[in-house]
Image 1 (cartoon, rainbow, N blue to C red):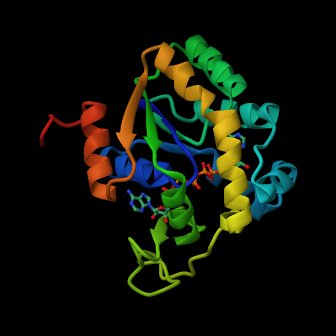
Image 2 (image 1 turned 120 degrees about the vertical axis):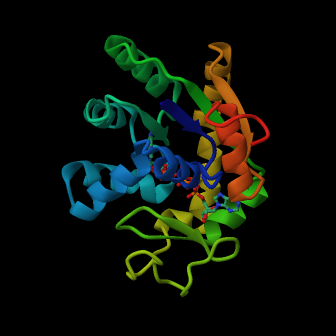
Length: 217
Ligand code: AP5
């Protein structure tokens, strides 16, 4: 399975990537999670990315593309790209890498929702920085507020989920990433999922649209 998840911040890309990971053992490649790990470890890459991420801007294409080359090599049997590509230049670089490897993409899944929903989801998001698992204090709270159900450690709110940064990230998506919808539609790879549904209905539509489950199952 080789999939790309496309959609604005808060649409539920990470949540659904983890559904496929649990069900099929698919490997999630989340560029946001990788960058956050670099920041936590204080690497050069993490330091380079920090300012862009805090401002809600995209990290420069050359930095991200260089990072993805190494990640791809670790997943010869398939992956779900979550958060990459995010610009036409990144998409073209990914096309070239996959063509060289002879690894065609099965589908690009677009998750979309209205701006008010995205803002309210992000303002209620809590995550486990150790595992990447996310909760929502309104729609999917942990058993104990602020504590991860799995490892019992603390949950955190992302600094880029502050309202002013969320607004910036949504604007950046519209200008720099939304053009990829047409890019992938033109090559016949795009499938669309209504991200306004609850998590399990989104997962059901996703599985049907990538034909991992019979229609109506
Ligand atoms: P990244 O970490 O990729 O963030 P994002 O794309 O902005 O996406 P999010 O993680 O915010 O949202 P999501 O769609 O995964 O939603 P989630 O499932 O968590 O990127 C962060 C930064 O890194 C960027 O701003 C940039 O600086 C940099 N970066 C990363 N990749 C880059 C690249 N390729 N190029 C350049 N820079 C890059 O869900 C959100 C909330 O909603 C959760 O609380 C969840 O529980 C809840 N929820 C999910 N689904 C539902 C549902 N169906 N119903 C109700 N609630 C739901």
